[in-house]
Length: 199
Image (tube, rainbow, N blue to C red; front, side, top):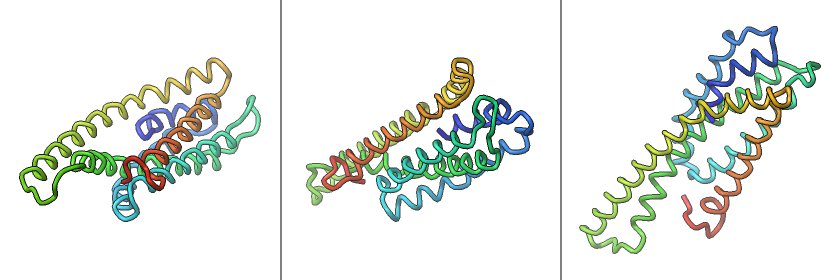
């Protein structure tokens, strides 16, 4: 979401608010997301990665709905200030979620590798730790590669939605639906009581 929103934000401003210069505002969102990312990791350390990620997805879904409400519809209405604030919240959550998700991944793989290992067997603990760290690092790399695809997918979704329906609403509702799915997955596997892999 972070890379995709950063890439698509200027396009969305230009297409939906033609009287606004996108260059005057588009840089602020990625800046907010990048600056707050370490805070997401720190917050995940304090409160738990799953909890932070879960609530972060909730705020992301709400922020996307807010963006939709402030867009012009059929060339009428629209409120740039509301749109911009909701998008800044969205960028804030992409940064926090980035930090919390990247905190969850190593914990998940290390926990999984340590299952069934005798904690008093130094060699077994060392081997499991190495395996968990290796798998976690590989998954972080894979995750970063998938994240980079957002730089293509999100702007393309805007463009396709505008071409097919006259506005970006369909793409944005799809993103909101995706975040709802992420809420369900995060809650079920990581955040609920007796979750399969609490973290």
